Length: 162
Image 1 (cartoon, rainbow, N blue to C red):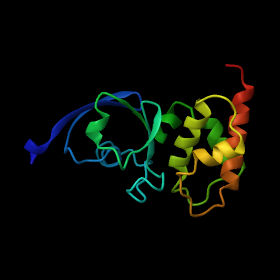
Image 2 (image 1 turned 180 degrees about the horizontal axis):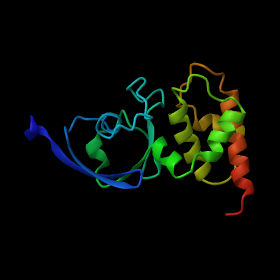
Image 3 (image 1 turned 30 degrees about the horizontal axis):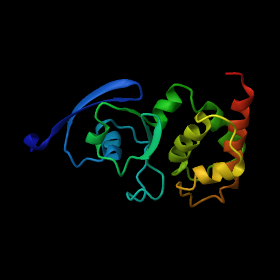
Image 4 (image 1 turned 90 degrees about the horizontal axis):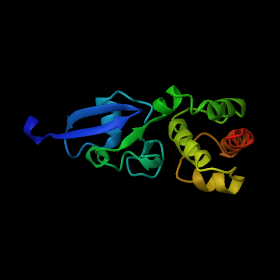
């Protein structure tokens, strides 16, 4: 019923968005269904796999665990938005060069998490990278190529003067 809907205003990938949503709609479902941003994947829907990670005001969150209305007034950035503004170019290049993806299902969440880690500053070591991606489940790889790719991208970014 339309009367069960509540207003939602937020920014998604730099653009203002205003919609009416059901209060129980998850941020993941809102992004995928209402906005057709389907790179945000739904895996476990319990916050364990990391496939649904997006940035909420710059912080990685499991969008399957956040109601869309909880993002009211905030900024959401998905892998589509990060890609469109070129923020993931170095990571994507490193993932490709290191063959750090297989089926690709976990890749959007992995890229969002890796981006946030690199943006936090400094050049993380392999243990810090493993810790950062410990909430991202990948069935296809042994994670070594992913850690290599993130380390490569972080090192490359660390060499560029700010």
